[in-house]
Image 1 (cartoon, helix red, strand yellow):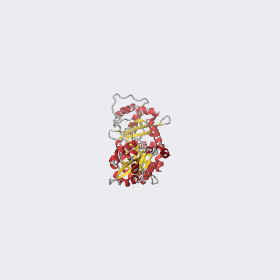
Image 2 (cartoon, helix red, strand yellow):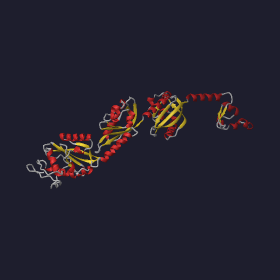
Image 3 (tube, helix red, strand yellow):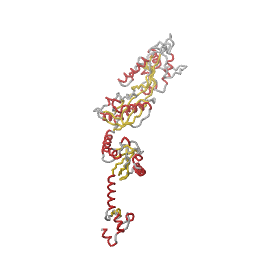
Image 4 (spheres, one colour):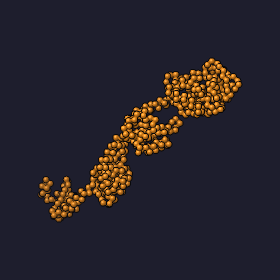
Length: 486
């Protein structure tokens, strides 16, 4: 364009040749231009519009604009420039390629004519007007543009203000990228998330809900339209809010996924549903954390069953205890507490074998647990339990492997029976037999001697050690063996 005081050259349909000296100006650097829209539109018309020739008065601050516009036109990315009135002044070949509209068709017309959707037109033009009015940039502005084929294309651009010498903003330009395929995939992703048969929640950086899928809605009784845009924490059971807030903050801060944790949500009816969630960060195109996606599993029913299971264990009329894979106590019911004289609080987390088992039986009990850790059950294992006061209680135990909801081994549960009284009775029974004033003997199903009292030993002159384990017929006359066998 000509310096101030001279007439500008007449516009033609053929774009002007590049200037002899190209200014190496970064695309995002503010460029000093005239403080009026006419200079920009005249410059654009001079270089792009196929109109009747006309003359434009060129202010002195515009000479480098043509050079800068040439750089923008040659960019291998979609570029659009808009003056303060909202009319297009730059529409580079890449924009023409992805939309089908040539620069001659677009430059000089309002950008809104090429934006798809009435609501987006208003939003984008309002944003551009704010950029001009406040001389500020707008990052990641998604512009849906019409195309000549009838479908819309999505351009993600950063709008940068174009400044005059006096600092006033005379327009904005945006260098972007074609994200049409990405937007399609994002839409498909959203559809999949909404229809998934698992509760899925998405949050933005302020922990406000941006996605509340159908499964979550059916579980809680709150529709997506009622929740999206609202903060998540008021939906969380009050006793868990602090912990959930810490988990969300940690994920947003570190940008790393956290371990599974339980999220209790309060439903529309006031009841509570339990969801096990894993928080995974979401990133924008610049790699910054933009929010969180939480994919969960409804464990309400499972938790209810576990509560019933715990209730049955706690009220059972048999000592029941469980250990984790390290042998530490994690289950200790009321009967176990009564039997051992230890309260659950005293033994939770302690090593069961080292604390509650008589020293000479510790290796045997540890071996039973090790077999259970390998998935092998042990039935009717007898061992002495040492009570808090030092008394020994005889326990008959079934040790069974315990698994979590994923099928992973979680430890061992032992269901026992206090057989102390029975053993005392058996010992008394054995004493009475042994001291009886009559020969008494007993055999098993193989006719092997298992009882041989003192009177039997005195009469036969075979001691208890001689007889136990021997076949009874050895001590019977050969003539009577058949009769005794019958």
